[in-house]
Image 1: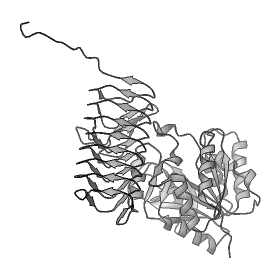
Image 2: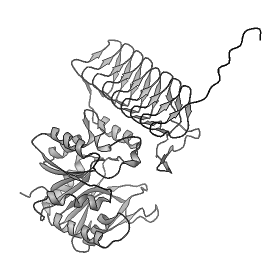
Image 3: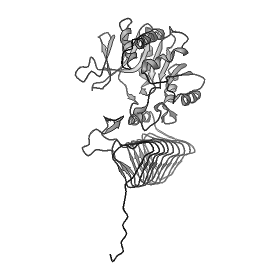
Image 4: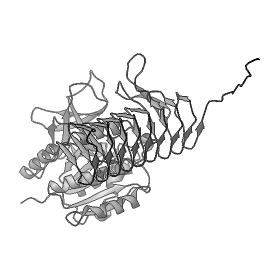
Length: 432
């Protein structure tokens, strides 16, 4: 029986594009952080050893986290000290690899796909362990990624980055689900690219291009769901992927659901949660441990994690709300809240442009379109949004920021900043 390849999960690199959110591999979707849930899926496919590549900021948290994975999968953690591209991240695994002739399966923690993709790649590898396999998702509409040059036999001869809608060599977009027949051969090809001192950070891609001239690369077509966590609003897409796995209604024995509350569709109500009279949970939806959904509140197509208060008449729609958030008589629409956000009474996240167009957001000084016609706010941990404040579509508010009462926020607010409207209080006697 062919030995399974060495699983390598890339979870390092810089996460600056995710601001104001923190380490994306540790974001929790349901009961577990994304990295741990991905590990469990790989374990179910037969993997029993893995290397995770972390960055210096996340390494300790990841080591603590993988200790919870159990004894059935052995996990080692390599650290990429500086973000020098995917090639450098892969090279950090070399000191942990004892057999350089072994195959390696490279994936990214923030790519969420159906199990069928991994199953298909592993089946192809078992049938011919000498070839290298790359997943290609079939996309009819143009996507700004790397397109595979493929012949009729499925042999890959190159990858073209962002060729433009009218210059695509195929409809197959490269997904980082790459199974290389020899990890030692891959290391040598990547090291050769770094030794060349060529500019850019695409050493891994150039190494593969060189290897394609020596060994056979085959495409494994994929037509399932693919959600990638690159920008902060992608949390909503990953959330949707996890919500889609909920089947039926799962209410913890010690949860309280009032007789006049409504549970509609596929719903999880976790341990210690309380759903008060008149409240409605409309699936797919996830309510975390100890969370309170108050009288006449509505949570629909959302995740509200642990120890949150969804207060009286609050609406949470198509949103991700992390642990410890406080909401009262407010509207949380198509938004992402990090931990411990206080969203006071009367606050609203506006989610729709006047022209109903694609909602943009500023990322590292660039205006990036989200691909969403509805997008509310992205709010960092410990932010305090005072009563009657409103955020415009696509606005981001940093960690520990404070927004004063009655303020309409049109631009991003940095970590720790205070934003408020100066008001003049005028009091006059009746005879003036």
